[in-house]
Image 1 (cartoon, rainbow, N blue to C red):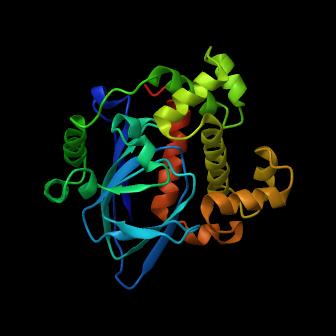
Image 2 (spheres, rainbow, N blue to C red; image 1 turned 90 degrees about the vertical axis):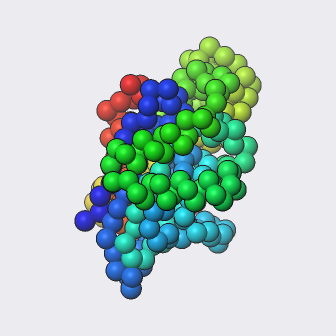
Length: 282
């Protein structure tokens, strides 16, 4: 069975890092596993400690080795392909976490190898050091130490954090005008602060959050959940729901479950549980 764990960041990093995570899963070299990674409004990084898999944008066909890279906020899905056993460690950042690394303008729907961000020697030593540590807190601490000197303050972070909380509490259904009113700022000022910190606007962020919840319901729901969820989440016709489904997952609703392995489902379920149990991030 795959093992997936999360670890809270040090207090000083909580403005930029939501959690550190790691996963290990057995596998047969002859078996290829595929999973769709749904956009959730978060950038992050992942480092392969074993045989790396392949990450692909199914809408553009672009693919790259999933060995060690920073990933920006995704507006499109990624397809993960892995054969044999897998072992990864990584960090999920806050929506403005890429700005804390000075990378928000480069990373929306983008991938930056750690070797290009630092240098090949630094990236190689980090992966080697992580491999020497046990699965658990020691690995999380090592990765936190690596990021500690690379994180910097983010402008307007308090405003953006309030806006993100409002959008997420609404499930992505709140208008930007309402978010601006509830944060006591103008529409234009909110947009500048939000896009400056995350790389995308608040409206697009809301669309991502809305669909992340929609797909999560389909993962957990019965086989005929699509029609019910379409209505619950504001989709007034099934064709509209189907178009958005393909946009955010890269596959049709009928084939979605065939490309969901245990880890992808578990990561989604944990994200939803974390948001409902601790919306304030305490």
